Image 1 (cartoon, protein in one colour):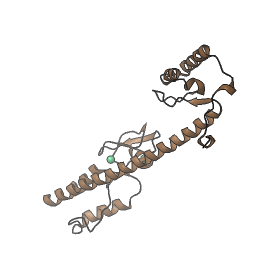
Image 2 (image 1 turned 90 degrees about the vertical axis):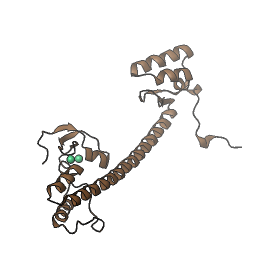
Image 3 (image 1 turned 180 degrees about the vertical axis):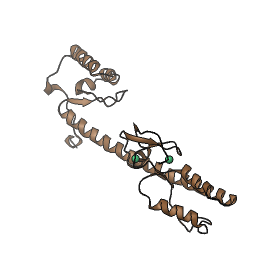
Image 4 (image 1 turned 30 degrees about the vertical axis):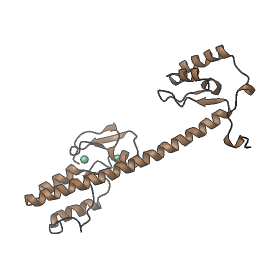
Length: 215
Ligand SMILES: [Zn+2]
Ligand SMILES: [Zn+2]
């Protein structure tokens, strides 16, 4: 292993980018790419696989071909450009060929990185959408009970509050600035002190679209 340091509790860069798995686990430092990885991903490997037809002059060098081949068969690990560069530099190649190989590697790495970032963004958007849908369903349920969530809270706190209080613009603003359950309670109590508690039947029910009368 390239890393001699003791594992720490943290997030594996590779798990996070691959599966959006950002839970804490023992992670090891990679001295080459300077990122942290779980045990499975701790070993550096070549950052991409080679399309032999497009790689210039590599077929002619059995050492490069062999090293790509070993990398290709390896399980786990993390794509590491610094590692690839180090491996190429260690081979006694003609300088021109070596520089060309490294330049080609940089291009591929940038391309692969772009693709990974794009996939990550797409996955995050999907997760966000699922979360929003779940929230909507929860709010729908709460509305039936005369309650709702503080969806516009400045600090992203989702407090369960009475629907009539949150429907009042002034009190909604107070609730959107609330940071604790305690202050939520104070705001709600104050609202009822001012407006009195209405009977449940008087609380306006939010209508579903299918309940609207169409003329
Ligand atoms: Zn990992
Ligand atoms: Zn690394």
